Figure 1 (cartoon, rainbow, N blue to C red):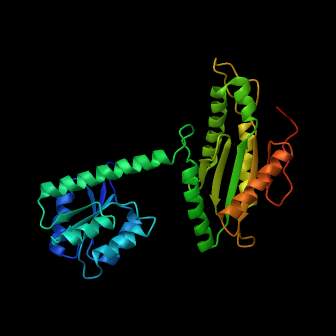
Figure 2: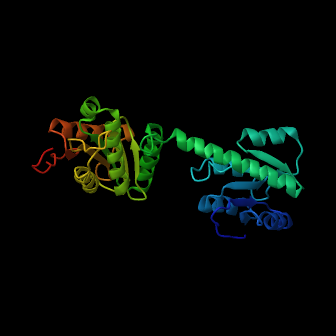
Figure 3: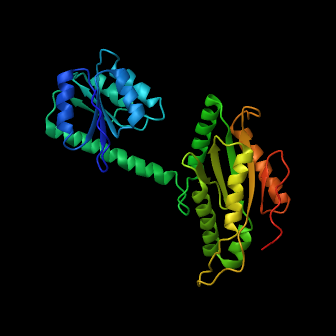
Length: 318
């Protein structure tokens, strides 16, 4: 096995090939343009793929330690490696076999031995297609105004985080944040000012996230944050920072003058813990929504943890 570090601006390729001479020649050829990892058996190849997240995998169709199609299936069943494009290296010219490779999700196949020119061309094409798909996926899962994740991305991430919290037995908190009086802002000052208010909240949210946290714009004035390894009481500290911070932020009118109002949020929080586990993500979200409703019912501009009394804001109003 050969390990080479990832260089900025260079794609990382993983070669899984049992023939040592082929593996060495491929590694030497590709190292001029790419960072290269190599593995001589299926198990090590899968391990390296999970650890290093390569940009592309060159996979031998037939491996003594595991059929190439079985390796591809293993890679596709793991969220860490499922997006990585795979090109099969094969000496088999049987069309049915090659069709099977493509049906299972391989992006291409290369007959051995292949010329350096053909090899590079097929790798370049696969990398371009992968990057285009990645960008389209990001656009499809991103809110256009705030740059945060959108509802589609949230539903996927919530399920993933909930499964991990169940499996590894740690807390997960959901924080639902609603920008108060957005309709009144839009009606009275215009949607441009309303959008600035939404962006102000989004920036406060981004500035308080940890690397492991996740935030999304759920709707027009509603945002959701997922906080792994945080109880609801710990998440309430996070939410209070956002609530208090937003009150200090001013919003400008379209003519540049300051808008005659301040910003506030209502926040509902619920958690999944070992002591109080939620049955599923629907139950967790319903609890957070109930807490948000309580925050609004109590007068807005406050943080409510599900099952606990509302925390009242400072006396000054805006």
